[in-house]
Image 1: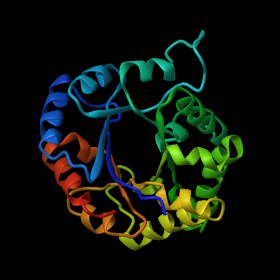
Image 2: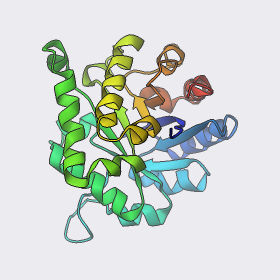
Image 3: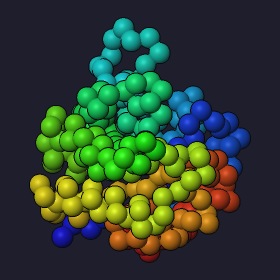
Image 4: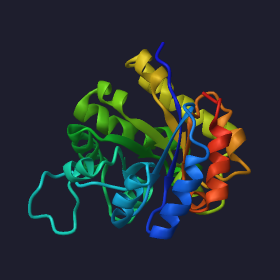
Length: 249
């Protein structure tokens, strides 16, 4: 059975500064552990500074296209050359605000892997979808778009982050039991196609995770860490969350 490793990833969204890069890198260097992977996703202008600080770094999105006439877009190969290791694909804000479809997300996933980046595939349902009992249907469709394009084996070199849209930036959080149920659904779905891959796949929870609820969330069998939003902008909060992930996988 393949082993998996806990991860805590911080998505800064359109926030941050050079001073915050220094503060966070100093804090993270004090909690680094072989037990967990710690990754930060700053805005594009701060990526080089974050990489130079020694913190594992990713970008919040990437173009699905190869270099060309795409004003304002950033090519995955350039991201890789800068020294980034990861990229978020399919974050709920990219899906909702920028109307990225499952097909576009799958194309971004493919382009990231093509150049050697590790994609973190974000999946999750809206509040209305959750209330109507469509959570598993929506999450399955988002994962299936990648599997249909690239095959299930592509998930081996990736991370999945389950982020219920109704719990992002709202202060609402899925209970540990609710989150575990969806994480188990994801792992079981992939296990039906490749059991070893599923057991080795890191699956994160994202949705108003903070230092008060992270320990209970990360203690769940199929939750391997978190994709952190607001709390990743505060050194004390983020390092506390990182420490709570140690020894959980």
